[in-house]
Length: 335
Image (tube, rainbow, N blue to C red; front, side):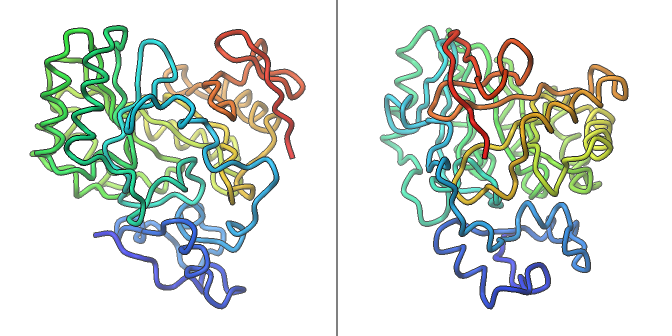
C-alpha cells in the first residue's frame, strides 16, 4: 500500500511542515515496505534520504532543468521518446508506487499529472513503433510500468509481440524493490513472451534488498526473465566505496546483474544529491580490484539537453567536457 509519510518531523525537525511545501511541487509517496527499511532514529538513514522530502528540494540551482535529459526534444508523439536509432522509450503511465526525491522526471510524474496515455494515445504510440522498422528494442518506463494491471501489461506485450522488427522488450521499474507485493504470478505471466524480455530494477542501497525483494526477484527469474539493476550515485546514500561494494555484491548474489551506475541528473531541487564527477570516478576506480567484473556496473552520465548517455571514462569526459555518442562535445561545468 502506498501512503504519504506522516512523520516528517523525525527526519527533518527544522521545518514546520516540509511535506506540504515540497508536495505542492513534487509528488510524495512511500510504501509500507520502504517504511520498514528506514531507521527512524537515524537522521541520515540512506533509505529515508531517497524518499522523505527535504527542505533542500525547495532550492533550485541555475543549471537545473525541468527536463534534464531532454525527453521532450526526442518525443515525436505522446508516450514515445526516440533518442537512439534502434530503440525507443514507451511511457504508458505517469505514476509510481513511490517517488524518489532525486528523480529526473519528477516534474512529469505524480497523481496530478496528465501524462498517462489513454487508449487512443497508447494505440498511437504503439503504431509509431509498428511503423518504425529500425526499432529493435522497446524500453517500457514511465512513471513505473509495473503499477499497471497485469491485463494492461499483457495487452502492451501482445501488441509488441506482433511486431517482427521488435526483438527486445525491457521494463524499468522500482516496484520489485519498493512494493514487492505487486509482483504477483499474474503480473510475471503478463510479461512472458517469445521476445527477449528483461526487467531492470532500481536500487541504491543494500538496506533496500529485503527478503520480500528477494522473493519478488525469484518470481521473474523462475519465469526465465533476466534481471538487471540500475543505481544512482547519491551524496549521503551510497557515495562510499564500501557501500557500493555491498550493494553490488548483494545484487549479484540475488542473480541481478548491476547494469548502470548513474551520475545524478540536473533535475530541479536535487543539488543536495549531486557530487563531483571526479569523486564518482574515484569511487568506481576503488571498486575495480574489490569486485568481480560481473558485479561492476558502468558509470554513466545522461548529458543535459537530450544528447544521450555516455560512460564517464577517459575518451568521453575530460575537464568538464563530455563527448556524446555522435562525437559532439558538450560543456558539463559542475557547481
